[in-house]
Image 1 (cartoon, rainbow, N blue to C red):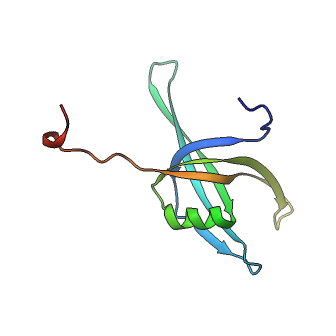
Image 2 (cartoon, one colour):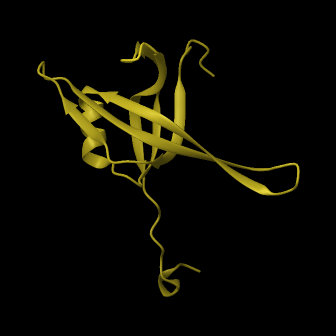
Length: 122
């Protein structure tokens, strides 16, 4: 375990919307989308419960271009990055708080294709 890493996040989940790629005047690029992660547990009544958390993903530069080019809604991806928090004041004067995952690396997870029974090895 690398104890020098103070803010690291690894998530595997399903992309909940198509990636939005923003091009800025200075040439920088930003990609954003949401990621659903699921947890299944058994409650006190013995019932299986599925809980979904939604995470806002942000990527910059080359990573943004790659995510926008390879990832679409419904894809399963693994991301590695850090969590970031920010706030702003809306038009009514209320402070809004936002948490985001800043993606440094990602991997699109491909499901294995089903192999017909007659072509499977023994």
